[in-house]
Length: 82
Image 1 (cartoon, rainbow, N blue to C red):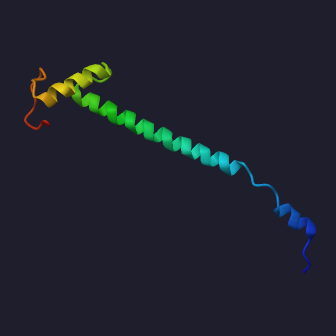
Image 2 (cartoon, rainbow, N blue to C red):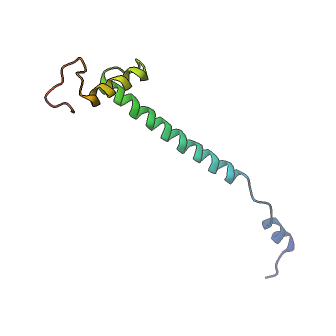
Image 3 (cartoon, rainbow, N blue to C red):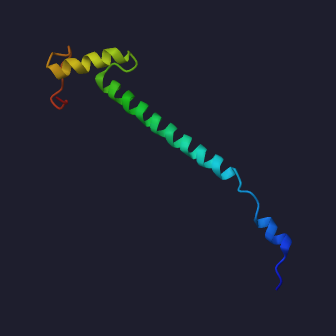
């Protein structure tokens, strides 16, 4: 079986850029998922504190009060976190 020179030159094409674009898109999707998970975690923490969507400053102030041992203004259940 003889080698066909036309067939050999067809395999020596430049690499496709589609592979690079797909790698970039997968990387962007991965970053988006990580950001979304961080947002969901922060939202869940804010809901547990009882002030979801009321501002990050109030959340930080409440957490600082809890660290210092000051009363937070609401009664805690027996199974609550310290």
